[in-house]
Image (cartoon, rainbow, N blue to C red; front, side, top):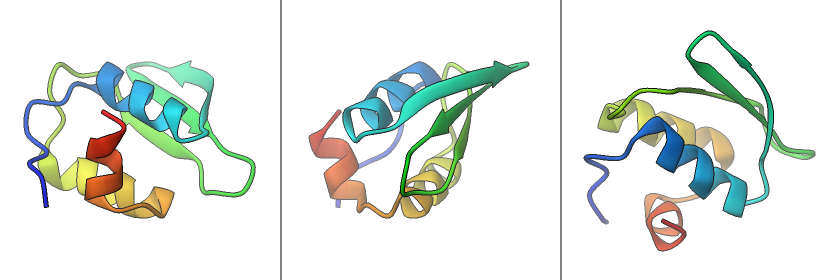
Length: 72
């Protein structure tokens, strides 16, 4: 399993977009991503995301950490 450190909110959004998510809107500092058949994700637009938060977003998206890192 790869390391999830030093990934920004913008980088995470780009990876999730490669996985089929689309940016729906932004509320404050949170970017809301939408997918037709998966749960909606809310990603904070921070310089660095906490690894635990990123792991929970990955789990919500129904993918593995390795799949996320492969699309990085």
